[in-house]
Amino acid sequence: MVGRKLFINGEFVDSNEGATFESINPANGEVIARVAEAREEDIDRAVQAARKAFEEGPWPKMSATDRGRLLRRIADLVLERRKELARLETMDVGKPLRDSSKVDLPLVVDCFQYFAGMADKVMGETIPVPGKFLDFTLREPVGVVGQIIPWNYPLLMAAWKMAPALAAGCTVVLKPAEQTPITALELAKICQEAEVPPGVVNVCPGFGEPAGAALASHPHVDKVAFTGSTAVGKLIMEMGAKNLKRVSLELGGKSPNIVLDDADLDEAVPGSLFAIFLNSGQVCAAGSRLFVHEKIYDSFMDRFLVGAKKIKIGDPLDRETQLGPLVSAEQLEKVEIYIQIGQEEGAKLVLGGKRPDHPALAKGFYFEPTVFVDVDYRMRIAQEEIFGPVVVVIRFSDEEELIRMANSTIYGLAAGIWTTNVKRALNLAKAIKAGNIWINTYNMIPNQAPFGGFKESGVGREMSRHVMDLYTEVKNVMVYLGKGGVRWFS
Ligand code: NAP
Ligand code: MG
Image (cartoon, rainbow, N blue to C red; front, top):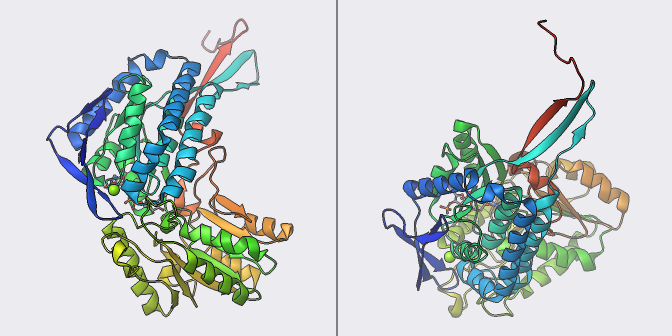
């Protein structure tokens, strides 16, 4: 077991009160690290350091091109350490090593590379206003940014938050999730090694209350970027209102994954398994509501269930493992409660619904791939985010009715459409209220494309060039080029 400290003002330090908490390996319940716990005073220290770095340090004087070079150095160091980081991620979250090494780490490296290139391509515009004026805009960094992230993709979420903010010239205080603080602290170490100036990046593990709340309500934080549940997202917005912080939110989902009667089932079956069971369903965009056309319902479901039964559950450090444990005992309990709710609501459980009985898995927070059929779209299991390996299957025949059902939740994060008919695909893509639509694919989230939610799935778009709007302010500059311009009072 190793000790981990807070990263404030370029140094690893203990928390003010000496408080610590444990990080647990969900595969066996063992403590893997004792981590310093940030509380209000630590958050305040980190915010002061970020403010000073933003106003006075070398950071505001550095050219955008040099900031880009720094981000590239971070990308290189992550690439060098990708094996060790993937292993740490797997031990902290429980996701299979196959996921952390083939999905998470490559995306993290790509994220820093992408925003390294973005740094000196953030620019204003010249505007043809009437009269003898030159009018142009500047894009300036928004300032000190508080960033709060969840546990499902700890390092990737840290990268998504940090890279664009640094590219824009902001300074950052990041609070990782209490369940998964380790790789964010490793990223802090990498920033230190890359010689990011002190105070520009601060990483403060701790709990939602007090650390997250202290960050979201701190008067010297200019912007807060949050990824997590819709319930907490609403609190963050309220806290941010005190000093009118800019607030961007990436929240929950209950995304429809739709299989039409003309779908190529060789694509749609494995694609739909991937849509829900990736990372044990702990994916905000998970295709957790599976809509299947009645004409192909039986053939699709036969193959889907065969595929789900074959998924290999096991030790996430084993390269063969396809499904690891859930992140925590608490998350496991939440999923179990939904199984009970689904049965009480009259849905039919046709696969899973329980922990695996294998004795080797008894100490971990494992849960079997689970499928409910005969689901009505109004049931709680079809409306609420479960965030586990649980899919609810809804049969449909009429496309208008399908659209109504698909749009029936408070969420609007993503949707999948499986069809060989391009007109049907695009008409549905337009009709569904979601920020991300996948046609004949699912869960593809490249750094180059915008990501975010409609309705209660969020505010703002992260990634791509769109995210730069979240981390910059627009300043309009107007210059008079003539003579005798203002004579109002003479
Ligand atoms: P959560 O409970 O909302 O927590 C997210 C983060 O907020 C954690 O760091 C948490 O701290 C912190 N937090 C909790 N209460 C807080 C408060 N009162 N004030 C300030 N911060 C607070 O969500 P979760 O259960 O960890 O994560 C799962 C959720 O995230 C799901 O709903 C999922 O859909 C969503 N998600 C969305 C996206 C997206 O891009 N849209 C991506 C991934 C996940 P602790 O460390 O104490 O937990
Ligand atoms: Mg952990």
